Structure formats: C-alpha cells, structure tokens
Image (cartoon, rainbow, N blue to C red; front, side, top):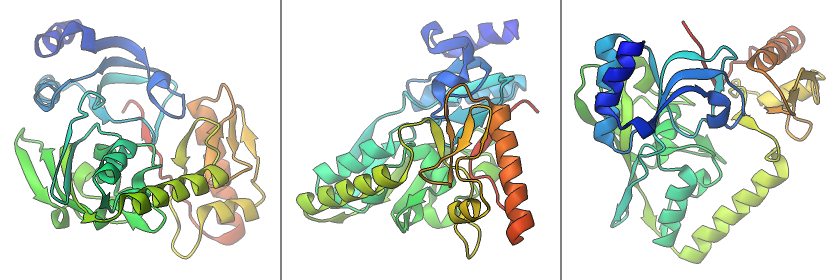
Length: 301
C-alpha cells in the first residue's frame, strides 16, 4: 500500500490524509479499529479524484459522513475511508435548499428555519449528514427524506456525475438504490414550503425535547439499532422479550429506550454484535419476528 499512499498524496494534500486512524474517533458509537487511510476531501472534486484513484488501484474504500449509523469492526478497515466532513456548503433559493453531502442535518434544518422554510423540522435531531440521510432515506416522527427530496447529485461507478430526481432513487423504509448502484452522493436539494419562523423553530424544539426525553443521548450509540419490523416496534419487542438493560461487555440495551444499543464504556464491535445476535435470537424465539440491523457495519471483506 506504500505506492498507493504516494499516489493518494498526488490527489489530496498530505494534511488531509491520516494513516492508521482509529475509527472510534469518527463514529458516534465511539467504536472501531484503525482505517488504513482516513481521507478528508475539502471539495466534491477532491472526493471524486480520491474515489477514482481507489477504483483504478482496486483499493477498497468506503464513504462516511458523521459516522452516526455505523459500526466499524475491532480489526478496522484495510482500505480508504473517505469522509464528507469537508463538504459543508449549502445555498437557499426561493423555497429550495441545496446542500452538499457533508452538511449536518441539524445544520440544514436550522438553515431552513432561519429562512422561514418548513419541511425539515423532523431532521433537526437526526445525528447524520445529508449524504447519509439520502442513502438511508432517514426519517423521524412520521416524515422521511423522500417527502422533501427534489434530486440528488451522485457519482456513478463509471466516474460520471449524474443528477437524479428523487423518484429515480427508489426511496423506501431506510433504503434506496444508491448503495446497490454504487453511487456516491455529492449533493442534494430539498423542496420546502414558506412558513412562519417562530412556528418552525417551535416544532423543532418540541421534537428535540421529545428526543431528549425518550432517547439515551447521554451515551454513545449509533441511533436506532434495528429496523422497524412490519406491524411491530423493535424497541417494544426487545423490551417484552426481557432484554431491557441486557449487556454484553461494554454494550447494553438502553434502559431508557430498548431500540438503542449503547456504549456504556469500553464496548467493542464484538460486544455489540454478540448483544444484537442474542437479542434477535430471543425476539425470534419468543415472538417469531425477525429483527434486521439498521446500523451499517464496516469490516474487511
């Protein structure tokens, strides 16, 4: 990989290339071994060049935003992690908000509220970025990205930049066609509506208070751990199966909200995976319902 490092530095300034960087520093779970290279492009063009190099050299790579829906293996990742944290530009025109992939959802929602634009209030407390939210069709409190998304600008497998209307992204419950098609989200635009700033801010504060009251925000986590099974709520199934407060190592089913697995301190990815395995097994045995992980996992192939 030494020769690759030299090539990487040709497309990226040295100060934005970190070697053997612990991914625990870059995930909200505060878990994860080292990435061989952690790269922080400062512009879409730099990100595209880095992706192109990885493809050309056949080096594995993965794009992360805020690391809020991610569990990185304890062994780390023998490839390149490309962070979108440097892609934080946004603009507003009329009732549309346009934001790069690395813009935090909280920042996008606040920017909209400051311009009396309604529609993104639900996203204000989601600890992720625009890029990740589009990939996952993130949602909360009865609303989702697909309700407001106009289009997404993506880089395809062939290195082409495409602007795809929302209806071409196959947005469903915590899913889209983006990962399957190998797209990298560069930017997105949202269609909002003019409203009253005070009312918009009030709604955001109301949802924030609900989130603080019900979710274990005082501990590192990756958000909701399991997807919602059809006709059920994952947290209730886990609670009813007797797993409230259940722990493996430093990982624990939150006593505040059983839909969250938290890092009580020193948790490893192995702890989290074993806990989730036991919880899913218990729910299946007691209720015949399959729990599917919502949290993405990054590990070596």
